[in-house]
Image 1: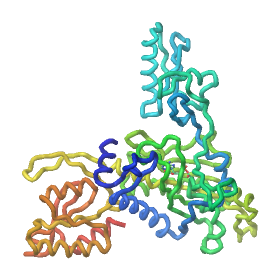
Image 2 (image 1 turned 90 degrees about the vertical axis):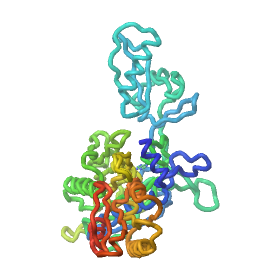
Image 3 (image 1 turned 180 degrees about the vertical axis):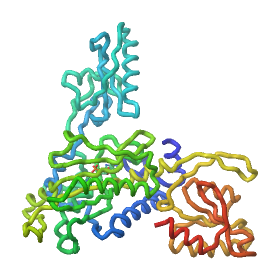
Image 4 (image 1 turned 90 degrees about the horizontal axis):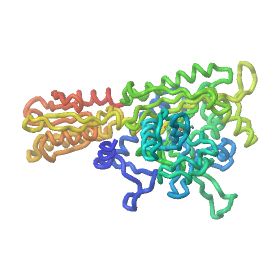
Length: 497
Ligand code: GAP
C-alpha cells in the first residue's frame, strides 16, 4: 500500500487535498493521470449502464436538495455512525471499529485491552492481553481473547477499557449517534429555516425525480434511472487512502420493478451484472467475493443486500452494495410530499408504487481497487540486457489513463520525429495518447509501464525507409511486433470501448 500511495503521488494520480496547507483529512485531489483514470471508470460505467442498454436512463441532480428530502429518506434521523470519544486525547473513534476484549486469567477477568480494527484485530488483542498479564505479573492460565466492538460494551465495562490513544482506561465515553451529513445554509439567513445538507448519496435524486422521468422519459417497467456524482459524508475516521473519504463520487442506479415482480431474481441478475462489469474493467475474479447482509441486520424495509467485496491490501472490504429496497423510498417521498409516486398497471388497471433494486458503488473505491490489482513489481532487461526492477500498472486498456505512447527512436532525426508526430496527432483525435522523445527507448518504455500505458509504438528507420510499419511494444508481456497504422487503430477499436 505504501508503494502504491507513493506511486500515486509521484506520477500524478492522487494528491492530498490542500497539501501546501498541511492537507485536509478525508479529502483528495486527482492529478492529471488520476483524472483520466477516474473519467475512464465513469465513462465505462455510463456507457455500459446507460447508453448500451434500452431500459436505463441517466440523470444528473443537484447536490443540495430540499431539506425535506433528507427527512423523508430517514437520513436526518438515522444516518449516523456510533462515535466514541477519548476525553484525554480528544481522539474520536467509530465505535464499531474500536475493539476490546476482557483479559481472563484462570476464569477471572483481570482487566481489558483494546485495539483499532485492522487485518489482525484478534491477534493484536491476544498480544495485548499477554502483555497486560506480564506487566501486571498475574499468575495463571490466560484464556483466548474474545473480541467485541464498542457498540457491544456493557456500561460497567466502558470505564475499564483502555483508550487506544493513551493506553489507559477511564477516558472513553459510551457510544453516541453521530450524524454524518454535512450541514450548510442556503441564502443569506443562518437559521434553521435556511439549513440544508450536502447529499450523502446520489440515490435520493433518482427517487425525487422519479415522476419527472416517468412523465418525460418514455420509460416502461422494468426500467432504471442512473446517476454519477459527488456525495459527502462527515466520516468519523476517514482512512485507507481514498477508500473512505469525506468527499467521494458515487455511481448509483435505481432499477424499478413491478410490485409483483420476482425481486430476488432481479436482485441476483444485478449482482451478476456488477461482478461481470468489474471483471470487464480488469479486476481479477480471485479478488472478488460476495457478502450477504444477515437478515437481522437489515433495515426493516430491506428485502436483502449483497455487497461485492474486494481484497484490498488492508483487508477484504465492501466495494459495491446491491440492495433490494422494496418501495420504501418512493413511499416515503409520496407520504412526505403529498404527491403520489405511482405507476398505472395496464393489465390490472390499478396504480401501484414500484419496488427498486439499487446497485450503488463508489468511483474512488473502484479507482483504488484497480490500482491495487494492477500494481506489480517485476523485472525487465535494461539497455545492456541486465535485469532490473520494473514497476508496472497492469491496467485494462478500457480504463488506462493513456492508451498509447508514440516514440520516435531518435529525437535528432527529423524524418522519424515528423512521422511520429503525424501518427500522434491522428491518434490524439480519438484517444488519450502521449508523445515522448526524451531518453533511451528502454527508459521511455519503463516510464509508460509505471503509469499503465498498454502499448508503446516506436517509429524507426524501417518505418520511413521500408513499409511504414512500426514496432508495437506490449506492456505486460514486453513483446514487440511490427504493425501498420490501420492495424493499430483496429487494435484500439477492439480493446478500448
Ligand atoms: N444509496 C445507497 C448507498 O449510498 P452505501 O453503501 O452507503 O449505499 C454505496 O454507499 C457505495 O458508495 C459503497 O459501496 C462505496 O463504494 C461508496 N462509499 C460509501 N461511503 C464512502 C466513503 N466514505 N468514501 C468512499 N466511498 C464510499
